[in-house]
Every structure is written in structure tokens, then in C-alpha cells.
Length: 136
Image (tube, rainbow, N blue to C red):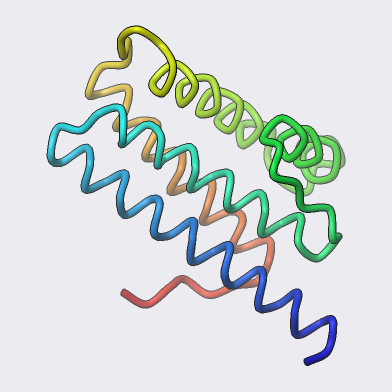
């Protein structure tokens, strides 16, 4: 397997992780599991970022590092829209509050918006990468 094949396989794997996390977020919200929905919505976006970083071999497990690289490599040069950065940063903060805070402060409607942003974020990542929409 060539290096290019390995990178393509890693991108595909990261996109599959993103799709699965988004599906779990949607199921969680449907079942009233709001903290899990927030967590998985953020992770769907995070895995999308890792897919973008894979060709540059710049992947990192540190969330702040991945977000910073995303902003520097894709948002600052206007390869992806500025709102993607805002959505990612907001999702990260909301995930931290949901996972580590004493209570969830997001309403059902706000979580719906977060999931919509995650869906749009992943669609933009796929479009940028030239990847097809997954078959479910």
C-alpha cells in the first residue's frame, strides 16, 4: 500500500467516524440524551477536521491543536467558510460544558442547531475533500 493509499484510507476512516458520531448524536437527541447528543455532534466535527488534516500528515489527538490547525490551514486562507470555525469552537465549548459542567445549559432547540451545524460542517468537509456522501 502506497503512502497515498494510506492517506486515502485514513481520510475515509475519519469520515466514517464523523458519520457515525453524527448518527449517534441524532439518535441521542431523539431519545432525550442531550449531553450525549452535544458530545457526539462535536466529535462528528472533530473527526471531519482530522480527515482534513490527514493529507497534510498534521493529525493530532489534542483538540485545541487540531482546531488551531483547522483555523490556520483552512479558514484563514478562506478554503472553508469562517462560520465553520465559529461552529467548531462553539461545539467544542458546548461539549466541554456538557461533559464536565454541573448541568447542561443548552435547550433542545439549541442542540438542534448544533446538529444542523455539524451536518453542514461535514458536508463542507466532504465537498472540500471531494468525497462522496456516504451510503446508508
